[in-house]
Amino acid sequence: MIEEFSQIKKDFQFTEEDVRNIVKLKPIFERYVDDFIEKFYDFILRFPQAKNFLKNEEVIKRHREKVKKWFLDLFSGNYDLEYFLKLRKIGETHVKIGLPTHYVNASMNFIRRYIIDVIDKEVEDRKERNAYVASVGKLLDINLDILTVSYREEELSKYAEMTKMEKKIYGFAKKFSDVIDLFILIALVIVALSVFFLFGYDLYKLTFNIVELEEGILAILGSLLILWAVGELMTEELRHLKGGRFAITVFVGIALAAIIRKLFIASLGSDSEKKAIDLLSYSAVILSLGVVFWLISKRESKE
Image 1 (spheres, one colour):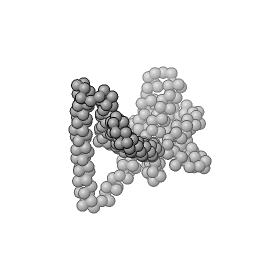
Image 2: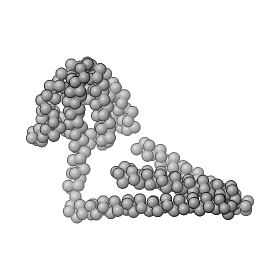
Image 3: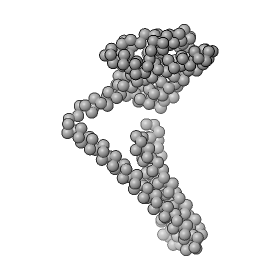
Image 4: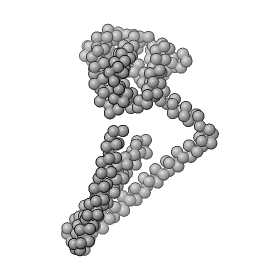
């Protein structure tokens, strides 16, 4: 265990000189600790799910004291085994309560910016200031590495608990999923090209007066609407391939675009009775899809 944490410090090139630099900052940040706590809480309470973890005043008070102690310990100069074990325990607690790693990373980014701002304000010598920022940066990176290692260990432990057959199935399923994603992307490219041809055909009919001016313009607008929707779907699929979450609302958006195009065309019909029925039907479908789109968007924004 001792060797593990010693190696972490070596990997980040965290030296005794860095320790001396950080200790020199201790008197400064002891004066700023209360200001830091207030600004830190202003920052984290803006997270959408913050109230799920800081449920009442008692929890907040206890958490404030722990954050305050952690912040002062940053400048203590004692970065021994006990210090690292405390960080591991904090990370394990984050995993246990289900705190997203995004919140941990965002919070550490805020802390880094706050410390740099204070150093810029309090230290006049540029060379000395740069040395302090570099040393604190290493320590914060070490903290973040240890705080998030519990998340990686949790993922690895779940994989390690699988049987050999389950691991093979998992590996095959993951590769097959990647193939499906690539196939979907290729299919979307083909669909986008088809919509280009549809747009060109609509433009051709309008140019050579094969259709009425109003009908041609509405058809072109409908084609552009579908092309836009397909472009959005391709963007989401590319984001998904990079590891992002896929937005279901894009599928609903494409359906809306297709029905709106139908509505454009139906509005030009000559049969009044059939035209009225078609317009009412398409309007009802658009209203339903709009409600579905709104409900899904609302849920995704909460998540």
